[in-house]
Image 1 (cartoon, one colour):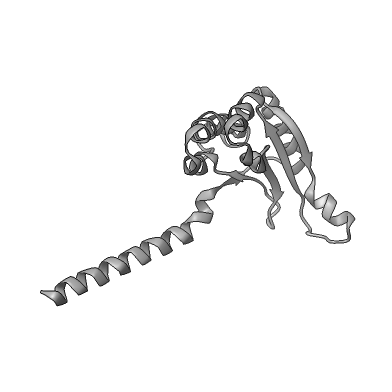
Image 2 (spheres, helix red, strand yellow):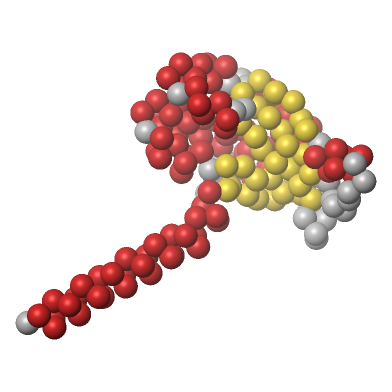
Length: 164
């Protein structure tokens, strides 16, 4: 009987280790939402900035990372930009109780050229990450922000494809 208990416990521990390893390997693919824009680089930047404003958000600036890197003598061979966006009402709700999360603000969408020349977007999966923080963050970021980001990105992928 003792051997069966020890064997069962060993399999439970092995199962837990395998599940943890699987989650560890899957996490990077789940934490970032990414897809093709179907547009050229400059067209993608312009379309995203327009969609941000058209969906009632503030365009908080665009950082052209590849330009900044190349000015310092380092080349990456492809263009990369980070488009920043903020919704003042949502930001106020989160910052009223969780100011430390200002480290995650403003929201950002990266636009970048792949080695194949196609332009892609990527962003943090706010709908997946927000529940970790709970409370107001879960409600605002996991609800309103995630839904609005989905609408904003639909300029590239259609409403059914974004955020999956």
